[in-house]
Image 1 (cartoon, rainbow, N blue to C red):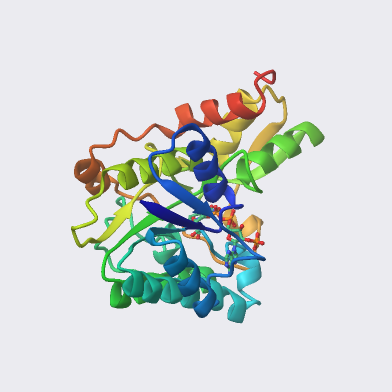
Image 2 (cartoon, rainbow, N blue to C red):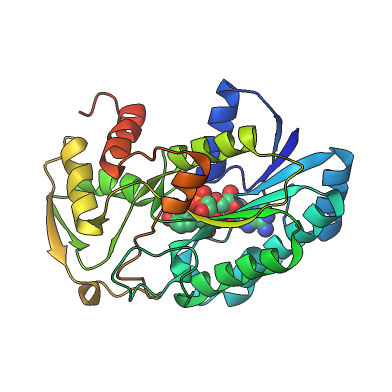
Length: 290
Ligand SMILES: NC(=O)c1ccc[n+]([C@@H]2O[C@H](COP(=O)([O-])OP(=O)(O)OC[C@H]3O[C@@H](n4cnc5c(N)ncnc54)[C@H](OP(=O)(O)O)[C@@H]3O)[C@@H](O)[C@H]2O)c1
């Protein structure tokens, strides 16, 4: 099968490219800006027709959560209108659409891990734009899977782990919020799950599923930062601070743990614990640091 991956120079897209280099069951087409814009309807349709695309994996997104608060038009164009374009193309080409969404579709006021069917109350412009992208897909795409994930990090791109490693080398101490709790996700694990599903899904079946996928286990950003410093061999002290002490333009969910039972049961996944995945990620980027 021919598979289109959009946003392929981002964290998740890069991990998919790396996996693909090692295992080639399908033919993947990796695309990104500026040559391939998911909001350019005609160009996307022409590409998919020309390459007989049977599945689209949408890793493209506007992920600058704070910038989105003042750049509302672009956030909605990429996160709502882009998925709608891909959903229309998936309809025209009879292709599966596999889309990535976020824990920010929830307001984080819950106190038990969020299930797929829980009421969405999006957090900020980013969360609202991603939620409307999900809804467009549910309305339009004949066959889709939506994966909500959280706290994504990777050796590629900018993310919390890489920021902590940098700050840990530059500073003696750092304050990190302890009152936001969730589950980190190594993008390489999510990429493996996606490839595993693409290797096993039945093109004759119509899918209409939303799944939650993060690494197993729960922590605060403070706990996560401590483990990054420790595992990275850095002596920088991590001090717990409250969200109110670190004001940011966008509101963050205080509790964004996702319940992953559905994806585990449906696809027989064993999802790695966040701590094990952090160690594997750090080994891959800084083998001498530990
Ligand atoms: N990062 C997180 O912590 C996190 C958490 C939960 C869910 N997610 C979701 O997980 C998915 C993957 O996230 P990620 O961290 O891998 O994102 P990322 O690193 O920001 O990558 C997104 C990619 O999409 C590209 N892109 C932006 N607008 C586009 C457009 N109009 N057409 C085509 N490509 C476009 C970006 O290019 P430019 O860099 O040139 O803009 C970038 O290469 C996203 O759906 C995101 O919402 C992320």
